[in-house]
Length: 110
Image (tube, rainbow, N blue to C red; front, side, top):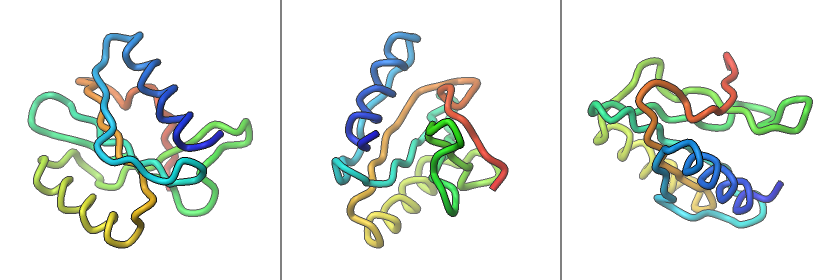
């Protein structure tokens, strides 16, 4: 699935679940890597990024890995994203507010 369509579907699903989400940076429509910042609404964030290798499971669903072992503050997250955008201008950055989870996204142990 094209990155833009996947991001739009994620935001619609989250909205339907009562979670706020927004695109912080639009990337390449076709195949831009998607990074999802989970705002836990307590000053901490997790950043979900594509794993090394395939970013999809056997069923074709996108999978993610946590960039940081523990939640981080906004400044650390923002600095990391700024570095990534210098390296890859095609990435998508989406923020989802989710107090207790990962917006229903699949995580890998990578």
